Each structure stands twice: as C-alpha cells, then as structure tokens.
Image (cartoon, rainbow, N blue to C red; front, side):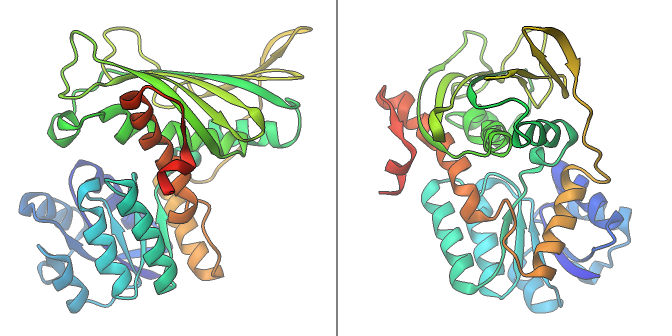
Length: 331
C-alpha cells in the first residue's frame, strides 16, 4: 500500500476520501484542509488520528511519511499545493482543471518534468463505460473515418461558491470534461476553436454560462459544442449527448448509452465495455500503476494541457470574436 496525503475535504473531497479508504492501492497518510469542520467529518468517518490532520500542507509534508499527494482543492489553489508536493519529491494526483490559468498549468507540467515526478490530472469522465465503449468502437474502425460530431449538454446546477463568481463558469470548470472526452473518444488533439458566449436573461452566475463553439481537431474532424449550465427544463446527463458521424454510419451517446446506426438499419445498442472500476476509483488504481511501472499516465499534466488550453482558447475566441489556434496560447 502506498501512502497519500489528501488536501481538500469539501463536498468533492469527501467522495475522494471514501475512494481512498476503499482502495487496495492507497491508504490515507494525512488530511489537510483549512476548514476544520470538513476535515473533522472526514477524520471521524475514516478513523484518521488528530495528529495526522493539518490546516497547512507544508506542516503535513514535514510531519508524515507519504508517497504522493491528492489535491482536491479549488483550481486557484492548485499551483501552490502541487508545487509544494512536487518540490518535496512527491507524486501528485490532482483534480481538474490542472490550474486556474494556462500559464500556471504549463508551469506545473514543466515542474513535474524538472523534478522527475508524476503529476496526473483526474479526468475521471474518460474512465466510464460509455466513453470507453465509444473509444473502442472507433479505434476498431467500425465507424470508418470520422468527419464531424455534435455534442449537446444542458444542466441547471446551483453550486454557489466560487463557481458562480467565475467569468465563464461552464467553460472553465465543466467543459474541460467534454473536451477531454473528445480527445479520448476520437483519439485526436484540438487544434483550433471559435465560438459565441451567451448570457441568458435568467443566468444566476456572475459570468456567462452558455456557449456555442466549434472545435477543429486533427485530421479535419470538426465538433459542434452547444452547452449550458443554466438549463430551465429537460436536462442531459453529465456526459452530454453525442452524435459522431463516420463514413460507415453514426455513433450516438445518449444518457450514457452508446448506439450505432446506418442507412440500412435502425439504431442498435453497442455492447458496453466492462469495467471493474470507474471514475475516481479507476484513477487511483491508474495513478498507482503508473508509478509502479514508471510510465506516463494517460492524463499526465503535459498531455492534459491540450484539453485545458481548448477551454481558454474558446474564452479568447469569444472575447476577440475570431478563430483561435490552440497553439497560439503557448507562443
């Protein structure tokens, strides 16, 4: 068993703490949170001794032996948490997005490379049956050459807190999941984007929470992305609904079920890929395996930069009303 320090025990952090407690690869070495109530709740739930509960990460790093850090803090605190862990010689699994700005994200990816440590981003939406089923179907050539796709996502959550204060809450907090799913399912990076941001009259967020965007991927594949976090009626699930057009037919993802149809047949359900573990449980195992085998994880910080850069590229495209090449943001 490897030992991991968990930083952040809020709503999402409690779920992660449960996953660590159930893991056969990891055990919690310590908890860190500035919110004493959250930390106490997790400690009581999982039997964490008081002398291994800290308000400050640096104190925890000096006080307990650990192999890695699990960062479940808001994106604006990610640079400080990950930097402290990497410079202390620990590997890191962090929540998405990798950082609050692309500059900070790039700096973290560079630091991981410089220190020789693993920094893995928790893009959990990749690791679920619907996504892996669609990825496998396309990788096997059963859809033929993909031409274009449409993604429709509509939810109306009232999170409160920092998300509702963000300039583009949907784009900068949620859309990275869908963009990362695009890259996973299609096996292609995002090269350029353009789009329009919408501030619905009933929007309860400080910033715009609806977007219509066009993403250009490698090999000429184009994805139309229509998404909103202020839906007032029928909602999609969190994976969104997908229509992927290929030369041999159409692959659909609806309510996390995958279907295939062509001109000669009604749509039929694609057999679902079996997964023993999904989402956070898969990520913990994948993180442990990457460290044991000394290989770069699929969602390493360096690899994840393209997913994150796409979200920032669309905000630039919206503000400047032009097509933005993703690579521009690194030049």
